[in-house]
Image (cartoon, rainbow over all chains, first blue to last red; front, side, top):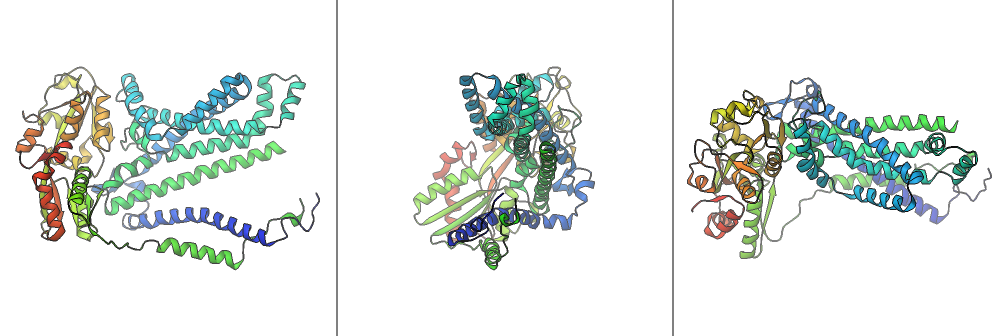
Length: 295
Length: 283
Protein backbone atom coordinates (compact mmCIF):
# COMPACT_ATOMS: atom_id res chain seq x y z
CA UNK A 1 0.00 0.00 0.00
CA UNK A 2 1.72 3.14 -1.15
CA UNK A 3 0.36 6.60 -0.58
CA UNK A 4 1.72 10.00 -1.54
CA UNK A 5 0.69 13.54 -0.66
CA UNK A 6 -1.13 13.96 -3.98
CA UNK A 7 -3.85 11.39 -3.26
CA UNK A 8 -7.49 12.17 -2.45
CA UNK A 9 -6.72 13.72 0.94
CA UNK A 10 -4.95 16.69 -0.69
CA UNK A 11 -7.10 19.33 -2.33
CA UNK A 12 -7.10 21.46 -5.43
CA UNK A 13 -9.75 23.94 -6.56
CA UNK A 14 -11.43 21.35 -8.75
CA UNK A 15 -11.59 18.96 -5.85
CA UNK A 16 -13.35 21.55 -3.73
CA UNK A 17 -15.90 22.18 -6.43
CA UNK A 18 -16.48 18.49 -7.02
CA UNK A 19 -16.73 17.57 -3.36
CA UNK A 20 -19.08 20.49 -2.77
CA UNK A 21 -21.40 19.43 -5.59
CA UNK A 22 -21.32 15.80 -4.61
CA UNK A 23 -22.07 16.66 -0.99
CA UNK A 24 -24.95 18.87 -2.00
CA UNK A 25 -26.45 16.10 -4.12
CA UNK A 26 -26.00 13.55 -1.35
CA UNK A 27 -27.60 15.97 1.04
CA UNK A 28 -30.59 16.41 -1.23
CA UNK A 29 -31.11 12.65 -1.47
CA UNK A 30 -30.92 12.26 2.28
CA UNK A 31 -32.90 15.44 2.94
CA UNK A 32 -35.70 14.26 0.68
CA UNK A 33 -36.18 11.14 2.78
CA UNK A 34 -36.22 13.23 5.97
CA UNK A 35 -38.75 15.60 4.37
CA UNK A 36 -41.00 12.69 3.41
CA UNK A 37 -40.85 11.22 6.90
CA UNK A 38 -41.47 14.58 8.59
CA UNK A 39 -44.37 15.24 6.21
CA UNK A 40 -45.87 11.85 7.11
CA UNK A 41 -45.49 12.59 10.82
CA UNK A 42 -46.91 16.08 10.38
CA UNK A 43 -49.98 14.83 8.50
CA UNK A 44 -50.63 11.89 10.82
CA UNK A 45 -50.12 13.98 13.96
CA UNK A 46 -53.85 14.86 14.39
CA UNK A 47 -54.71 11.16 14.34
CA UNK A 48 -51.93 10.26 16.76
CA UNK A 49 -53.22 12.96 19.11
CA UNK A 50 -56.99 12.43 18.81
CA UNK A 51 -56.96 8.68 18.42
CA UNK A 52 -53.69 7.71 20.08
CA UNK A 53 -51.08 5.34 18.73
CA UNK A 54 -52.22 2.16 20.47
CA UNK A 55 -55.81 2.37 19.28
CA UNK A 56 -54.52 1.54 15.79
CA UNK A 57 -53.76 -1.90 17.23
CA UNK A 58 -56.41 -2.28 19.92
CA UNK A 59 -59.59 -1.09 18.15
CA UNK A 60 -61.95 -3.92 17.13
CA UNK A 61 -61.90 -3.21 13.38
CA UNK A 62 -61.36 -0.64 10.60
CA UNK A 63 -64.43 1.58 10.09
CA UNK A 64 -62.86 5.03 10.02
CA UNK A 65 -66.15 6.84 9.41
CA UNK A 66 -67.50 5.14 12.56
CA UNK A 67 -64.40 6.03 14.61
CA UNK A 68 -62.76 2.60 14.64
CA UNK A 69 -59.19 2.39 13.41
CA UNK A 70 -57.67 -1.11 13.60
CA UNK A 71 -54.65 -1.41 11.25
CA UNK A 72 -53.22 -4.81 12.27
CA UNK A 73 -55.02 -6.89 9.58
CA UNK A 74 -53.55 -4.62 6.89
CA UNK A 75 -50.07 -4.94 8.36
CA UNK A 76 -50.43 -8.72 8.20
CA UNK A 77 -51.84 -8.49 4.68
CA UNK A 78 -48.84 -6.43 3.57
CA UNK A 79 -46.35 -8.76 5.25
CA UNK A 80 -47.88 -11.98 3.88
CA UNK A 81 -48.21 -10.67 0.32
CA UNK A 82 -44.64 -9.35 0.32
CA UNK A 83 -43.10 -12.39 2.01
CA UNK A 84 -44.97 -14.81 -0.26
CA UNK A 85 -43.91 -13.06 -3.44
CA UNK A 86 -40.26 -12.73 -2.34
CA UNK A 87 -40.15 -16.42 -1.38
CA UNK A 88 -41.52 -17.38 -4.81
CA UNK A 89 -39.64 -14.87 -6.93
CA UNK A 90 -36.16 -15.19 -5.38
CA UNK A 91 -35.43 -18.79 -6.37
CA UNK A 92 -37.11 -18.28 -9.76
CA UNK A 93 -35.19 -15.08 -10.46
CA UNK A 94 -31.83 -16.45 -9.37
CA UNK A 95 -32.32 -19.75 -11.16
CA UNK A 96 -33.23 -18.01 -14.40
CA UNK A 97 -30.12 -15.83 -14.12
CA UNK A 98 -28.03 -19.00 -13.64
CA UNK A 99 -29.81 -20.61 -16.58
CA UNK A 100 -28.98 -17.62 -18.75
CA UNK A 101 -25.31 -17.71 -17.81
CA UNK A 102 -24.42 -21.36 -17.64
CA UNK A 103 -27.03 -23.49 -19.36
CA UNK A 104 -28.76 -21.61 -22.17
CA UNK A 105 -27.19 -21.39 -25.65
CA UNK A 106 -26.02 -17.79 -26.29
CA UNK A 107 -28.79 -16.87 -28.71
CA UNK A 108 -31.57 -18.11 -26.42
CA UNK A 109 -29.88 -16.49 -23.45
CA UNK A 110 -29.79 -13.11 -25.16
CA UNK A 111 -33.45 -13.23 -26.18
CA UNK A 112 -34.49 -14.55 -22.79
CA UNK A 113 -32.76 -11.71 -21.02
CA UNK A 114 -34.34 -9.13 -23.34
CA UNK A 115 -37.75 -10.53 -22.60
CA UNK A 116 -37.17 -10.31 -18.87
CA UNK A 117 -36.00 -6.71 -19.32
CA UNK A 118 -39.23 -6.01 -21.16
CA UNK A 119 -41.17 -7.63 -18.34
CA UNK A 120 -39.45 -5.24 -15.91
CA UNK A 121 -40.74 -2.30 -17.94
CA UNK A 122 -44.44 -3.25 -17.91
CA UNK A 123 -46.38 -0.73 -15.81
CA UNK A 124 -47.90 -2.17 -12.65
CA UNK A 125 -51.41 -1.16 -13.63
CA UNK A 126 -51.16 -3.47 -16.66
CA UNK A 127 -50.20 -6.36 -14.38
CA UNK A 128 -53.14 -5.44 -12.18
CA UNK A 129 -55.55 -5.31 -15.10
CA UNK A 130 -54.37 -8.67 -16.39
CA UNK A 131 -54.72 -10.09 -12.90
CA UNK A 132 -58.25 -8.75 -12.58
CA UNK A 133 -59.56 -10.10 -15.88
CA UNK A 134 -57.54 -13.33 -16.21
CA UNK A 135 -55.95 -14.53 -12.98
CA UNK A 136 -58.74 -13.65 -10.53
CA UNK A 137 -61.52 -15.43 -12.51
CA UNK A 138 -59.20 -18.47 -12.84
CA UNK A 139 -58.66 -18.62 -9.08
CA UNK A 140 -62.38 -17.93 -8.62
CA UNK A 141 -63.29 -21.02 -10.62
CA UNK A 142 -60.96 -23.11 -8.47
CA UNK A 143 -61.79 -21.63 -5.09
CA UNK A 144 -64.37 -18.77 -5.09
CA UNK A 145 -64.56 -15.81 -4.81
CA UNK A 146 -61.16 -15.26 -6.49
CA UNK A 147 -59.66 -11.97 -5.34
CA UNK A 148 -57.28 -13.23 -2.69
CA UNK A 149 -53.88 -13.23 -1.02
CA UNK A 150 -52.85 -15.87 -3.58
CA UNK A 151 -53.72 -13.59 -6.53
CA UNK A 152 -51.71 -10.79 -4.89
CA UNK A 153 -48.70 -13.02 -4.30
CA UNK A 154 -48.73 -14.31 -7.90
CA UNK A 155 -49.00 -10.83 -9.43
CA UNK A 156 -46.27 -9.44 -7.18
CA UNK A 157 -44.06 -12.43 -7.99
CA UNK A 158 -44.40 -11.69 -11.71
CA UNK A 159 -43.53 -8.07 -11.05
CA UNK A 160 -40.39 -8.65 -8.98
CA UNK A 161 -38.87 -11.64 -10.83
CA UNK A 162 -37.29 -9.31 -13.44
CA UNK A 163 -35.71 -7.11 -10.77
CA UNK A 164 -34.21 -10.06 -8.92
CA UNK A 165 -33.14 -11.82 -12.11
CA UNK A 166 -31.48 -8.81 -13.74
CA UNK A 167 -29.53 -7.85 -10.61
CA UNK A 168 -28.47 -11.50 -10.15
CA UNK A 169 -27.47 -11.63 -13.81
CA UNK A 170 -25.32 -8.52 -13.46
CA UNK A 171 -23.56 -9.75 -10.34
CA UNK A 172 -22.88 -13.19 -11.84
CA UNK A 173 -21.33 -11.43 -14.83
CA UNK A 174 -18.86 -9.82 -12.42
CA UNK A 175 -17.46 -13.10 -11.11
CA UNK A 176 -13.79 -13.12 -12.19
CA UNK A 177 -13.28 -15.34 -15.22
CA UNK A 178 -10.27 -16.89 -13.46
CA UNK A 179 -12.60 -18.49 -10.90
CA UNK A 180 -14.60 -20.16 -13.61
CA UNK A 181 -11.50 -21.27 -15.52
CA UNK A 182 -9.96 -22.68 -12.34
CA UNK A 183 -13.17 -24.52 -11.54
CA UNK A 184 -13.21 -26.05 -15.01
CA UNK A 185 -9.52 -26.93 -14.70
CA UNK A 186 -10.25 -28.74 -11.45
CA UNK A 187 -12.89 -30.75 -13.28
CA UNK A 188 -15.81 -29.49 -11.20
CA UNK A 189 -19.25 -30.20 -12.57
CA UNK A 190 -21.31 -27.21 -13.65
CA UNK A 191 -23.63 -27.51 -10.69
CA UNK A 192 -20.87 -27.83 -8.05
CA UNK A 193 -19.12 -24.81 -9.58
CA UNK A 194 -22.36 -22.83 -9.25
CA UNK A 195 -23.03 -24.06 -5.73
CA UNK A 196 -19.51 -23.70 -4.31
CA UNK A 197 -18.06 -20.77 -6.26
CA UNK A 198 -20.65 -18.64 -8.07
CA UNK A 199 -23.29 -18.43 -5.35
CA UNK A 200 -20.91 -17.65 -2.45
CA UNK A 201 -19.06 -14.95 -4.44
CA UNK A 202 -22.27 -13.28 -5.65
CA UNK A 203 -24.15 -13.45 -2.35
CA UNK A 204 -24.11 -9.67 -1.83
CA UNK A 205 -25.43 -8.99 -5.32
CA UNK A 206 -28.15 -11.61 -5.00
CA UNK A 207 -29.28 -10.20 -1.67
CA UNK A 208 -29.33 -6.68 -3.12
CA UNK A 209 -31.60 -7.91 -5.92
CA UNK A 210 -33.92 -9.59 -3.44
CA UNK A 211 -33.97 -6.42 -1.34
CA UNK A 212 -34.91 -4.30 -4.36
CA UNK A 213 -37.63 -6.79 -5.27
CA UNK A 214 -38.90 -6.78 -1.71
CA UNK A 215 -39.09 -3.00 -1.67
CA UNK A 216 -41.03 -3.03 -4.93
CA UNK A 217 -43.47 -5.64 -3.62
CA UNK A 218 -43.94 -3.74 -0.37
CA UNK A 219 -44.70 -0.48 -2.13
CA UNK A 220 -46.83 -1.82 -4.98
CA UNK A 221 -50.32 -0.34 -4.93
CA UNK A 222 -52.41 -0.48 -8.10
CA UNK A 223 -51.89 -4.12 -9.05
CA UNK A 224 -52.49 -5.29 -5.49
CA UNK A 225 -55.56 -3.06 -5.18
CA UNK A 226 -57.08 -4.67 -8.24
CA UNK A 227 -56.56 -8.35 -7.38
CA UNK A 228 -56.54 -8.70 -3.58
CA UNK A 229 -60.20 -8.08 -2.70
CA UNK A 230 -59.37 -5.33 -0.19
CA UNK A 231 -61.49 -6.73 2.65
CA UNK A 232 -59.97 -5.67 5.97
CA UNK A 233 -59.42 -9.02 7.67
CA UNK A 234 -56.36 -10.92 8.81
CA UNK A 235 -56.03 -13.73 6.23
CA UNK A 236 -56.23 -17.27 7.56
CA UNK A 237 -55.41 -18.99 4.26
CA UNK A 238 -54.25 -18.24 0.73
CA UNK A 239 -57.76 -17.78 -0.68
CA UNK A 240 -58.79 -15.10 1.82
CA UNK A 241 -59.01 -11.54 0.53
CA UNK A 242 -56.54 -9.08 2.03
CA UNK A 243 -56.03 -5.34 2.07
CA UNK A 244 -52.49 -3.99 2.11
CA UNK A 245 -51.47 -0.68 3.71
CA UNK A 246 -50.77 0.81 0.28
CA UNK A 247 -54.15 -0.27 -1.11
CA UNK A 248 -55.82 1.19 1.96
CA UNK A 249 -54.32 4.59 1.24
CA UNK A 250 -55.17 4.47 -2.47
CA UNK A 251 -58.74 3.27 -1.91
CA UNK A 252 -59.76 5.77 0.71
CA UNK A 253 -57.51 8.84 0.45
CA UNK A 254 -59.57 10.53 -2.26
CA UNK A 255 -62.64 10.48 -0.04
CA UNK A 256 -61.13 10.86 3.41
CA UNK A 257 -61.53 13.84 5.71
CA UNK A 258 -60.28 14.85 9.16
CA UNK A 259 -59.18 12.01 11.41
CA UNK A 260 -59.88 9.45 8.69
CA UNK A 261 -57.39 11.21 6.43
CA UNK A 262 -54.84 11.47 9.22
CA UNK A 263 -55.34 7.76 10.00
CA UNK A 264 -54.44 6.97 6.38
CA UNK A 265 -51.20 8.89 6.87
CA UNK A 266 -50.59 6.72 9.92
CA UNK A 267 -50.85 3.68 7.65
CA UNK A 268 -48.28 5.37 5.42
CA UNK A 269 -46.07 5.88 8.44
CA UNK A 270 -46.42 2.21 9.40
CA UNK A 271 -45.54 1.21 5.85
CA UNK A 272 -42.42 3.35 6.11
CA UNK A 273 -41.65 1.56 9.39
CA UNK A 274 -42.05 -1.82 7.67
CA UNK A 275 -39.67 -0.76 4.90
CA UNK A 276 -37.08 0.34 7.47
CA UNK A 277 -37.50 -2.95 9.33
CA UNK A 278 -37.13 -5.11 6.22
CA UNK A 279 -34.19 -3.12 4.85
CA UNK A 280 -32.30 -3.20 8.12
CA UNK A 281 -32.94 -6.94 8.45
CA UNK A 282 -31.61 -7.52 4.95
CA UNK A 283 -28.70 -5.19 5.64
CA UNK A 284 -27.79 -7.18 8.75
CA UNK A 285 -28.02 -10.42 6.82
CA UNK A 286 -25.81 -9.01 4.07
CA UNK A 287 -23.07 -7.92 6.46
CA UNK A 288 -23.03 -11.27 8.22
CA UNK A 289 -22.78 -13.05 4.91
CA UNK A 290 -20.01 -10.93 3.46
CA UNK A 291 -18.08 -11.51 6.64
CA UNK A 292 -18.43 -15.28 6.29
CA UNK A 293 -17.58 -15.14 2.61
CA UNK A 294 -14.33 -13.20 3.03
CA UNK A 295 -13.11 -15.15 6.02
CA UNK B 1 -4.98 0.82 3.57
CA UNK B 2 -3.20 3.46 5.61
CA UNK B 3 -4.60 6.47 7.39
CA UNK B 4 -3.89 9.13 4.77
CA UNK B 5 -6.33 7.61 2.32
CA UNK B 6 -9.28 8.29 4.60
CA UNK B 7 -12.01 10.51 3.16
CA UNK B 8 -12.18 14.05 4.56
CA UNK B 9 -15.24 14.54 6.72
CA UNK B 10 -18.04 16.92 5.82
CA UNK B 11 -18.17 19.40 8.64
CA UNK B 12 -17.35 22.80 7.18
CA UNK B 13 -19.72 25.75 7.72
CA UNK B 14 -20.66 25.87 4.05
CA UNK B 15 -22.23 22.44 4.24
CA UNK B 16 -24.22 23.34 7.32
CA UNK B 17 -25.39 26.51 5.61
CA UNK B 18 -26.51 24.55 2.58
CA UNK B 19 -28.48 22.13 4.76
CA UNK B 20 -30.32 25.03 6.36
CA UNK B 21 -30.95 26.74 3.04
CA UNK B 22 -32.34 23.54 1.58
CA UNK B 23 -34.72 22.98 4.46
CA UNK B 24 -35.93 26.59 4.45
CA UNK B 25 -36.56 26.47 0.70
CA UNK B 26 -38.51 23.26 1.10
CA UNK B 27 -40.67 24.71 3.88
CA UNK B 28 -41.39 27.99 2.16
CA UNK B 29 -42.10 26.52 -1.25
CA UNK B 30 -45.85 26.94 -0.89
CA UNK B 31 -46.62 30.55 -1.78
CA UNK B 32 -50.11 30.99 -3.23
CA UNK B 33 -49.85 31.77 -6.91
CA UNK B 34 -51.69 34.84 -8.13
CA UNK B 35 -54.09 34.32 -11.00
CA UNK B 36 -54.33 36.90 -13.75
CA UNK B 37 -57.54 35.65 -15.37
CA UNK B 38 -60.89 35.13 -13.71
CA UNK B 39 -60.83 31.68 -12.20
CA UNK B 40 -63.34 29.27 -10.63
CA UNK B 41 -62.07 26.41 -8.49
CA UNK B 42 -64.49 23.49 -8.39
CA UNK B 43 -63.77 20.42 -6.25
CA UNK B 44 -65.69 17.39 -5.05
CA UNK B 45 -67.47 14.25 -6.25
CA UNK B 46 -65.38 12.04 -8.50
CA UNK B 47 -68.62 10.97 -10.18
CA UNK B 48 -69.23 14.55 -11.27
CA UNK B 49 -65.67 15.69 -11.94
CA UNK B 50 -65.40 14.37 -15.55
CA UNK B 51 -68.76 15.94 -16.45
CA UNK B 52 -68.07 19.32 -14.83
CA UNK B 53 -64.60 19.34 -16.34
CA UNK B 54 -66.11 18.94 -19.84
CA UNK B 55 -68.62 21.69 -19.03
CA UNK B 56 -65.71 23.85 -17.87
CA UNK B 57 -63.86 23.38 -21.15
CA UNK B 58 -66.90 24.42 -23.16
CA UNK B 59 -67.49 27.37 -20.80
CA UNK B 60 -63.88 28.54 -21.20
CA UNK B 61 -64.17 28.48 -24.97
CA UNK B 62 -67.37 30.55 -24.81
CA UNK B 63 -66.10 33.06 -22.22
CA UNK B 64 -62.52 34.07 -22.98
CA UNK B 65 -60.38 35.07 -20.02
CA UNK B 66 -61.99 32.56 -17.65
CA UNK B 67 -60.47 29.43 -16.21
CA UNK B 68 -62.44 26.57 -14.68
CA UNK B 69 -60.23 24.39 -12.48
CA UNK B 70 -61.93 21.06 -11.64
CA UNK B 71 -60.50 18.64 -9.08
CA UNK B 72 -61.99 15.32 -7.95
CA UNK B 73 -61.90 14.33 -4.30
CA UNK B 74 -65.30 13.09 -3.17
CA UNK B 75 -68.55 14.82 -2.29
CA UNK B 76 -67.59 15.34 1.35
CA UNK B 77 -64.39 17.06 0.33
CA UNK B 78 -66.24 19.27 -2.15
CA UNK B 79 -68.50 20.49 0.63
CA UNK B 80 -65.62 20.90 3.08
CA UNK B 81 -63.63 22.88 0.48
CA UNK B 82 -66.55 25.26 -0.07
CA UNK B 83 -66.92 25.75 3.69
CA UNK B 84 -63.18 26.39 4.10
CA UNK B 85 -63.10 28.72 1.10
CA UNK B 86 -60.67 26.43 -0.76
CA UNK B 87 -63.12 26.10 -3.64
CA UNK B 88 -65.70 28.45 -5.19
CA UNK B 89 -68.07 25.64 -6.09
CA UNK B 90 -68.33 22.15 -4.61
CA UNK B 91 -69.64 19.08 -6.41
CA UNK B 92 -71.78 16.69 -4.35
CA UNK B 93 -73.32 13.58 -5.91
CA UNK B 94 -76.10 13.58 -3.30
CA UNK B 95 -78.73 15.95 -1.93
CA UNK B 96 -77.49 18.32 0.78
CA UNK B 97 -77.86 17.00 4.32
CA UNK B 98 -79.94 18.74 6.97
CA UNK B 99 -76.87 20.11 8.77
CA UNK B 100 -75.64 21.61 5.48
CA UNK B 101 -78.65 23.97 5.31
CA UNK B 102 -76.48 27.08 5.27
CA UNK B 103 -75.07 26.10 1.87
CA UNK B 104 -76.71 26.71 -1.52
CA UNK B 105 -77.20 23.65 -3.71
CA UNK B 106 -78.28 23.58 -7.34
CA UNK B 107 -79.10 20.27 -9.05
CA UNK B 108 -77.61 19.99 -12.56
CA UNK B 109 -78.40 16.31 -13.37
CA UNK B 110 -79.32 12.94 -11.86
CA UNK B 111 -77.48 9.66 -11.42
CA UNK B 112 -78.83 6.26 -10.40
CA UNK B 113 -77.11 3.42 -8.55
CA UNK B 114 -77.98 -0.04 -9.77
CA UNK B 115 -77.39 -3.56 -8.54
CA UNK B 116 -75.51 -5.62 -11.13
CA UNK B 117 -75.03 -9.36 -11.74
CA UNK B 118 -73.05 -11.35 -14.29
CA UNK B 119 -75.21 -11.89 -17.39
CA UNK B 120 -74.84 -15.69 -17.08
CA UNK B 121 -76.60 -15.53 -13.72
CA UNK B 122 -80.21 -16.76 -14.31
CA UNK B 123 -81.63 -14.41 -11.63
CA UNK B 124 -83.74 -11.69 -13.31
CA UNK B 125 -84.86 -9.72 -10.24
CA UNK B 126 -84.34 -9.54 -6.49
CA UNK B 127 -86.50 -7.94 -3.82
CA UNK B 128 -85.06 -5.28 -1.53
CA UNK B 129 -85.11 -7.77 1.36
CA UNK B 130 -83.21 -10.34 -0.69
CA UNK B 131 -80.52 -7.81 -1.64
CA UNK B 132 -80.26 -6.71 1.97
CA UNK B 133 -80.05 -10.37 3.09
CA UNK B 134 -77.24 -11.05 0.62
CA UNK B 135 -75.27 -7.99 1.73
CA UNK B 136 -75.55 -8.74 5.46
CA UNK B 137 -74.54 -12.37 4.92
CA UNK B 138 -77.89 -14.04 5.78
CA UNK B 139 -78.24 -15.34 2.21
CA UNK B 140 -74.94 -16.86 1.05
CA UNK B 141 -76.01 -19.14 -1.82
CA UNK B 142 -77.83 -18.24 -5.05
CA UNK B 143 -80.01 -21.36 -4.49
CA UNK B 144 -81.82 -19.54 -1.65
CA UNK B 145 -83.15 -16.86 -4.01
CA UNK B 146 -83.96 -19.26 -6.84
CA UNK B 147 -80.65 -19.36 -8.68
CA UNK B 148 -77.88 -21.91 -9.20
CA UNK B 149 -76.24 -23.79 -6.34
CA UNK B 150 -73.23 -21.48 -6.00
CA UNK B 151 -71.81 -19.30 -3.23
CA UNK B 152 -72.53 -15.57 -3.62
CA UNK B 153 -69.59 -13.16 -3.98
CA UNK B 154 -70.54 -9.85 -2.40
CA UNK B 155 -68.83 -6.80 -3.91
CA UNK B 156 -68.87 -3.69 -1.73
CA UNK B 157 -67.47 -0.16 -2.15
CA UNK B 158 -64.62 1.35 -0.14
CA UNK B 159 -65.32 3.56 2.85
CA UNK B 160 -66.18 7.19 2.09
CA UNK B 161 -67.64 6.74 -1.42
CA UNK B 162 -71.00 8.41 -1.97
CA UNK B 163 -72.27 5.37 -3.92
CA UNK B 164 -71.74 3.35 -0.72
CA UNK B 165 -73.45 6.03 1.33
CA UNK B 166 -76.47 6.06 -0.98
CA UNK B 167 -76.67 2.25 -1.01
CA UNK B 168 -76.44 2.00 2.79
CA UNK B 169 -78.99 4.77 3.24
CA UNK B 170 -81.50 3.12 0.91
CA UNK B 171 -81.21 -0.31 2.54
CA UNK B 172 -80.92 1.21 6.06
CA UNK B 173 -77.64 -0.58 6.71
CA UNK B 174 -74.40 0.34 8.42
CA UNK B 175 -71.14 -0.49 6.65
CA UNK B 176 -70.29 -2.70 9.63
CA UNK B 177 -73.26 -4.99 8.82
CA UNK B 178 -72.03 -5.78 5.31
CA UNK B 179 -70.20 -9.09 4.85
CA UNK B 180 -68.18 -8.30 1.74
CA UNK B 181 -65.89 -10.65 -0.18
CA UNK B 182 -64.41 -7.95 -2.36
CA UNK B 183 -64.05 -4.22 -1.71
CA UNK B 184 -63.62 -2.02 -4.78
CA UNK B 185 -62.74 1.59 -5.48
CA UNK B 186 -64.28 3.01 -8.63
CA UNK B 187 -67.28 1.90 -10.72
CA UNK B 188 -65.15 0.47 -13.50
CA UNK B 189 -63.30 -1.84 -11.10
CA UNK B 190 -66.65 -3.03 -9.73
CA UNK B 191 -67.95 -3.82 -13.20
CA UNK B 192 -64.75 -5.72 -14.12
CA UNK B 193 -65.00 -7.71 -10.89
CA UNK B 194 -68.62 -8.73 -11.54
CA UNK B 195 -67.96 -9.38 -15.24
CA UNK B 196 -65.17 -11.77 -14.24
CA UNK B 197 -67.21 -13.71 -11.67
CA UNK B 198 -70.58 -15.32 -12.64
CA UNK B 199 -71.60 -15.56 -8.97
CA UNK B 200 -70.89 -11.97 -7.94
CA UNK B 201 -73.29 -9.18 -7.01
CA UNK B 202 -72.29 -5.52 -6.90
CA UNK B 203 -73.66 -2.00 -7.20
CA UNK B 204 -72.41 0.87 -9.39
CA UNK B 205 -73.63 4.03 -11.11
CA UNK B 206 -76.33 3.30 -13.71
CA UNK B 207 -74.64 5.52 -16.27
CA UNK B 208 -71.40 3.52 -16.19
CA UNK B 209 -73.21 0.17 -15.94
CA UNK B 210 -75.53 0.87 -18.86
CA UNK B 211 -72.67 2.11 -21.01
CA UNK B 212 -70.65 -1.06 -20.34
CA UNK B 213 -73.66 -3.40 -20.69
CA UNK B 214 -74.45 -1.98 -24.12
CA UNK B 215 -70.78 -2.31 -25.12
CA UNK B 216 -70.56 -6.05 -24.64
CA UNK B 217 -69.48 -6.32 -21.00
CA UNK B 218 -71.33 -9.38 -19.57
CA UNK B 219 -73.32 -7.72 -16.76
CA UNK B 220 -77.05 -7.34 -16.07
CA UNK B 221 -78.68 -4.34 -14.37
CA UNK B 222 -81.36 -5.49 -11.92
CA UNK B 223 -84.67 -3.65 -11.52
CA UNK B 224 -85.56 -2.36 -8.05
CA UNK B 225 -89.16 -2.65 -6.80
CA UNK B 226 -90.10 -3.71 -10.34
CA UNK B 227 -88.77 -0.47 -11.77
CA UNK B 228 -86.12 -1.11 -14.46
CA UNK B 229 -82.73 0.56 -13.97
CA UNK B 230 -82.61 2.83 -17.00
CA UNK B 231 -81.72 6.43 -17.72
CA UNK B 232 -85.44 7.05 -18.33
CA UNK B 233 -86.66 5.96 -14.89
CA UNK B 234 -83.90 7.93 -13.21
CA UNK B 235 -84.83 11.07 -15.16
CA UNK B 236 -88.46 10.62 -14.21
CA UNK B 237 -87.40 10.23 -10.59
CA UNK B 238 -89.21 6.90 -10.26
CA UNK B 239 -86.09 4.74 -9.83
CA UNK B 240 -85.70 4.34 -6.06
CA UNK B 241 -81.91 4.25 -5.85
CA UNK B 242 -80.99 7.52 -7.55
CA UNK B 243 -79.25 10.71 -6.56
CA UNK B 244 -79.12 14.32 -7.68
CA UNK B 245 -75.80 15.75 -8.89
CA UNK B 246 -75.50 19.05 -7.07
CA UNK B 247 -73.31 22.13 -7.39
CA UNK B 248 -72.77 23.70 -3.96
CA UNK B 249 -71.84 27.30 -3.08
CA UNK B 250 -71.31 29.05 0.23
CA UNK B 251 -73.52 32.03 -0.55
CA UNK B 252 -76.20 32.65 -3.14
CA UNK B 253 -74.27 32.37 -6.44
CA UNK B 254 -73.32 35.67 -8.08
CA UNK B 255 -71.00 36.91 -10.80
CA UNK B 256 -68.99 34.30 -12.68
CA UNK B 257 -70.27 31.58 -10.34
CA UNK B 258 -73.86 32.30 -11.28
CA UNK B 259 -73.03 32.44 -14.99
CA UNK B 260 -71.33 29.04 -14.77
CA UNK B 261 -74.10 27.39 -12.75
CA UNK B 262 -76.77 28.69 -15.12
CA UNK B 263 -74.66 27.38 -17.99
CA UNK B 264 -74.43 23.95 -16.32
CA UNK B 265 -78.23 23.80 -16.02
CA UNK B 266 -78.90 24.99 -19.55
CA UNK B 267 -79.59 22.88 -22.64
CA UNK B 268 -76.15 23.89 -23.96
CA UNK B 269 -74.60 21.03 -21.98
CA UNK B 270 -77.24 18.31 -22.49
CA UNK B 271 -75.05 16.43 -24.91
CA UNK B 272 -72.20 16.42 -22.36
CA UNK B 273 -74.48 15.02 -19.64
CA UNK B 274 -75.84 12.32 -21.95
CA UNK B 275 -72.33 11.44 -23.12
CA UNK B 276 -71.39 10.64 -19.50
CA UNK B 277 -74.58 8.55 -19.12
CA UNK B 278 -76.06 10.88 -16.55
CA UNK B 279 -79.58 12.16 -16.80
CA UNK B 280 -80.24 15.83 -17.63
CA UNK B 281 -82.94 17.81 -15.79
CA UNK B 282 -85.35 18.04 -18.73
CA UNK B 283 -85.91 15.22 -21.21
